[in-house]
Image 1 (cartoon, helix red, strand yellow):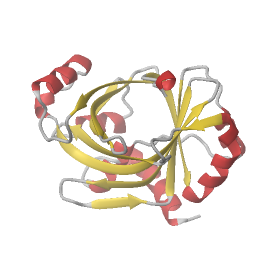
Image 2 (cartoon, rainbow, N blue to C red):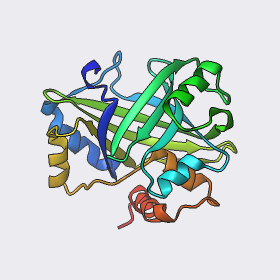
Image 3 (spheres, one colour):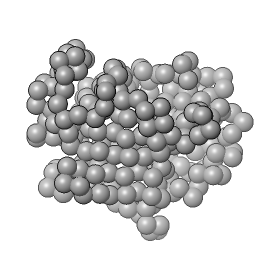
Image 4 (tube, rainbow, N blue to C red):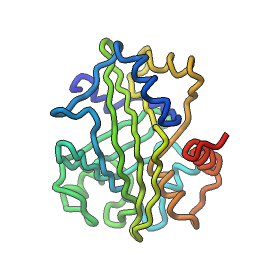
Length: 234
């Protein structure tokens, strides 16, 4: 894992029905190592996302703007670690991530945490507020020869400050994270299986689902696609 932290990387996402995951894992198993913590290969995550009162980060993503940020606190449940994380998507399509360890979830940032946000973003940490909490479980694979990491996220749940909840139990969000130019066995398998790249933001999907009053025109097709997979609609 240390060799594939990939804090500066390209990401490609795919979504497909959860009942296809066992066959996919079986087909590529000899090409990858699986991350195991203790006796567990299924890791649990909770993520608290922050945005401005007018949802600036969400709107930037909705409008297709690059050079955009996401701010979150992620709880790595299996190891009980919390990190304040900043993700930056630049105009070349690369994702760059910075993070510092923090004590837990919170609604306000300390001076150290504010300095971190000032240093790496154009956002004002004094006006950021919690907007969305998600839960999911993840299988992580690492390529045995190249700098590539693959994650499969399942059992995704969203909740907001009003305790509204949405669950996506029948969808897998796969993400291939790699250095530019790295050859991916998984991408080749997905092509053969007619599983095509599909942009998916957990934050934006959660916000669009839980805040119906917010602008979401560009996500309507994606939300419809997710609904069809979740409920087996053909």
